[in-house]
Image (cartoon, rainbow over all chains, first blue to last red; front, side, top):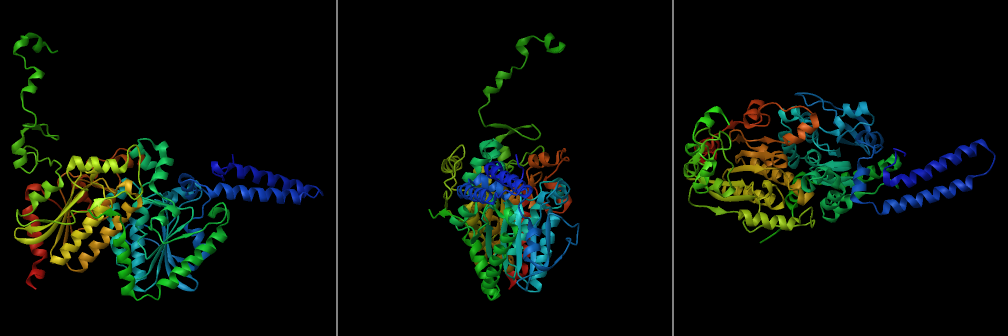
Length: 319
Length: 287
């Protein structure tokens, strides 16, 4: 089993292995097997298309957490020019699960803030699996307030399983840190664009997600609790995660259908990790488009619109 | 059986079966100190144990009834009812969970909000009903809270909220999550109008409610020994794989860590909140 492929992608992995094998043979011999390779590649493409055209929400949530999926800094590298990372909350520590800093997109100054996961074991631990502690949210808030002062738009990337459930995090006020960000972001006098690039895990995601534009990459997810968490509470069985994923409407398509997000950014065939460069180009285009729309808005109108968006959240019966 | 019991003739021993002679509900055992208490006395004492001061959980209506002046009272957004945008179904349908919670509590959803007076001064107060699906926050709770904020702005008066909640309501998924942003945004607006918000956290105040409106008080108050936090103790224990310190996430712990301003005994809440608000509103009322 190829670990770079999820279990539902294994048929694709097998084809890819065959192609790889043929390529090796091809370079050894003079036999022309180019045709055969092309045929197999076509087959692999159509197989991928067919698998990806009917992904279940649970499969999408696995893609959102794919070990090869591009993380915030992968996009920063491809989308943001002149990036200077800025560290620390000025009070307690620098939380490595959230990165932030000044940079340029399309020549325009922006404040970048995003969750950051780690690739290998050592980095995963360094980044605390992308689960911020209060100092991470307070660093994010410090940078947002700075952006407001200099009238720089805030661009956030959401990719976290959730805020860290730890003893120290509770002691230092995890709840207050998240709540304060929601409070401040709702009144922050500069445009905010948030994009879910992987996992949008609950309050830990929302704490950098109050925005004038909320975008999602096609195979990202956004939910109030992880499918496993929901399954273990409501079904009393974490194995029922796929049922919970179905029930909760966590995919970009479902959320767009419920008008909870503004736009879906399509991913390359097989997901963002199969072609990070092309994913980054689409992401950049969407961000530039959002900046174009929001930057000319008079601040008072921007704030009124944001407040209106927030107040419109919710579905209920009027008695 | 001890040697003493063996010595005693069985007929003068107290039989366990005798308990049945006491009418149901007349006497209660304190869940904390175990003292057997006369029900009416506990009720007179605002559901606080007269022996050990343990604070029993109380419902939203009772809470507001104890807090507000008897007259006038006007409920806010009582007509709102939950809907089921996702047609959510786990082992049970969300619709069925709603109707059984409604039947059990007599409430339409987990937050009750009222305009009223506190010692003669205008106030808007709301309270979570924990027995309605764990006081969870969905669209109706969020909307009612916002309407309560708007009523406070309209009346130029303070807002007090008594929270008791397990967090966001899973059955409304992202709609619930967004209520955290919605309620926080409304509180930001209240603050800009120079009106105070006092948040009273009661047992328990967790998850999405604690990580939004409950922690945003100008003054954050807790009842003694209330469990307050973001992640539940079991989740934390599973994550960090160590035993949690004694008193972790209790009101006294939060006071010590600087997360809340005050712990106030339920029997003093009315007086002390009125006192605080009197001072906070001094300039506002003079103008």
